[in-house]
Length: 175
Image (tube, rainbow, N blue to C red):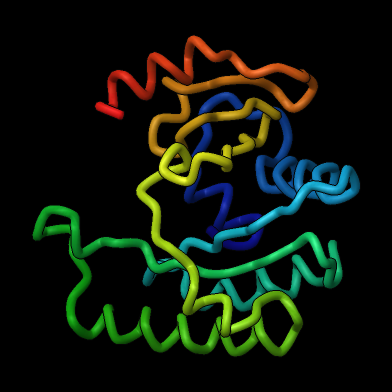
């Protein structure tokens, strides 16, 4: 969602010990060092469109360019919200222009291959993919990023997943 101040204010976690942003970066570092492929999605909206350029620099300084790291941006789909919360046409233009600028920077820094963008499939949430999970700042692993508190399936310190939670979630979601 942005650099440390923007991320922390956007997430606005209630019970926080330290900076959630720093914790996320630390977790990404642990995943990368363990050989996991990490895809960082930068959520793009009017509120953070300028800050994401700085975030790319922060990520580069912290992680450099790695074979197992991909960084991309995804506009928030505010047009799907109720009418009073939707972006205006002018705001939509700002977001789309900034998206192009961000991809240009991501490509130039080696974080993204534009040919890959054409092949990316859009998913509703992790279970649609069948292979992805969300790692929360505290190390918990969520099955679906849209229902994080409802679908915690493990922790990064654990070797197992809670199959009951996965099955219950899939049943409730009509899978």
